[in-house]
Image (cartoon, rainbow over all chains, first blue to last red; front, side, top):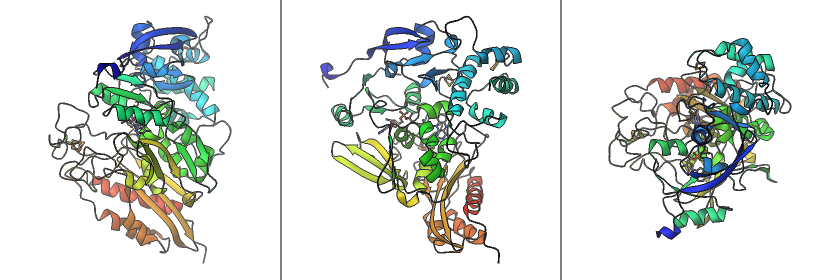
Length: 178
Length: 331
Ligand SMILES: Cc1cc2nc3c(=O)[nH]c(=O)nc-3n(C[C@H](O)[C@H](O)[C@H](O)COP(=O)(O)OP(=O)(O)OC[C@H]3O[C@@H](n4cnc5c(N)ncnc54)[C@H](O)[C@@H]3O)c2cc1C
Ligand code: SF4
Ligand code: FES
Ligand code: FES
């Protein structure tokens, strides 16, 4: 293969993060999590496992919750990313879910919390859009929002591990905003 | 991770031509398996061909009552599709039993079918593995193999296929649509994955550079009762130790359509043909189910530490068969 025909190892991408546009030249190996933390200094999103297993890196991309450790940044050209830093929008007020986490003391060390928050925001949208889960009765009506009880919340949040074991309060905090 | 080039073709044709020009490239879909393997150094392609934005993200009803699912439809969207939930419920259930919400939001139909084994030796460059490096030996055979195969394994490899979705598709008689520079073809999902045999490095019958363009859910299984059940180490977010998908129609107390496939037991979704043959035309009774399931599992060759899987699979299959069979009419 001549070097002329071999595509390079870097590309330019433009993405919006928490409403602000950014254009960066990225190494194709760059995952979104590292781009956020190292290139944009948005260190809210955390690296737990780096392999899709812990949920600490969960962010919203075009409104859907995803593991940012498994997303190559180069694939995200034109996407809208929301991290824990952007959940509250422009104002100084925290997102109601952030407020509920504070009120319920739904964390200890806090390492998993940004991922829990982004995941829960995505989860609420999924249930509102009628997405069922492994524990939803398969005979439930095919349209309309799925009601969330504790069992549903636990199943839907199962990919956000909390090593401090704050799960009961995390579930309560989420229940508060339903 | 070694550096790689990146291309985003605008069409299926451009994608397969890009591969033809760069053999050894990899197609990138949701990336939930491939990016993981890049990080582990198991995959070291010179080029990624991003197919994530190709127009393969539709789910379309065909005039004959079948449903065509595009290769880049996300697992979460497919599980939620009302047509799938209603007519091929085992597929929706299998998808929802797999991975996590975050992963399903990224994972695609095509990528799910081609995900690699979770054998820990395969993922560890410091260990021997015939699948990753042919001829290096199999670390699992005499090593840690509680999660490994009990059916159809070979001297060279005892890995299992990790997909939940593929098990449901196999039982539902789904077909996988492939496209390459030689044209388009279709294969039954039940025959798409290979047994390891002499070539464990090859997971499926796909040809180099072929692209999965979609999956076809046939009219013949639409609306037929079906279900999926999975046993795992945790209540959620873990791969199957064993699983089963069953499609069952009973008329006048007699089985007149049946598909059974096991997951977690073999290098491919294991279509239980012996069970199916024994059941077709037989009375839909617990005793008939048990006899038929045992006919299949009699072929199991468990390893030192995984004989439990045979019992687990037996109980899962009986539970689902009995649940799907209508209660006998009162005498
Ligand atoms: C922590 C964790 C837990 C998981 N648990 C489960 C589980 O319980 N059950 C389960 O079933 N799965 C599970 N998975 C696996 C997950 O389902 C797969 O990673 C996913 O389905 C792969 O899809 P993808 O689109 O991300 O594929 P990619 O990672 O993009 O691709 C996978 C492979 O397929 C090839 N490919 C992709 N699309 C095509 C195409 N259209 N044509 C040709 N080649 C293609 C790629 O080149 C690559 O080799 C888990 C994954 C993780 C990380
Ligand atoms: S079971 Fe297969 S994948 Fe696992 S180490 Fe042996 S050869 Fe490799
Ligand atoms: S860091 Fe991404 S899932 Fe653990
Ligand atoms: S609060 Fe410490 S890991 Fe969750």
